[in-house]
Length: 111
Image (cartoon, rainbow, N blue to C red; front, side, top):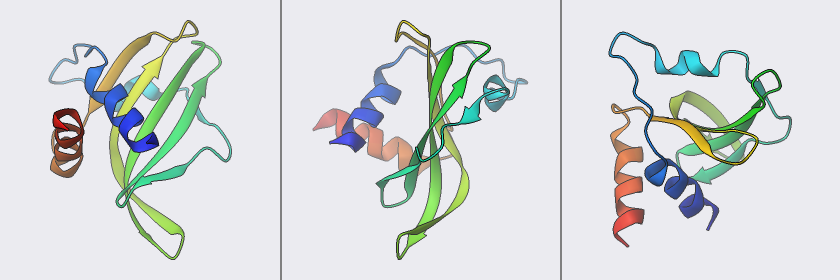
C-alpha cells in the first residue's frame, strides 16, 4: 500500500518546470535526512524523508538501490516530491533515465 501511495504522489503531483541546463537535484540543497526514515518500498527502491527547516518544506526522495539480506546499497537518486507546510506539493522530479521507476508508476496508475 505504501508503494502505491508514494507512486501516486509522484505521478499525480504537478510538475514544476525545470530548465534543461538546471540540475533538478539542486532544489534539495539545504534539506537534511530525517533519521530512521529510509524504508524499502519496492525491490529496487528506498524512500526517505528530508526536511528543510529554512524553507519549511518536506521532501520524499526515492533512491534506486540494490538490496539483499535487509541491507540496501543506494545506486542513484530516482525521484522526489516536495511539500510545503500546508501539505501542498510544490515540486516533483522523476529521473527520465530511470525506466524501471517510470514503468512502476505507469503500471500502478493503470491498475
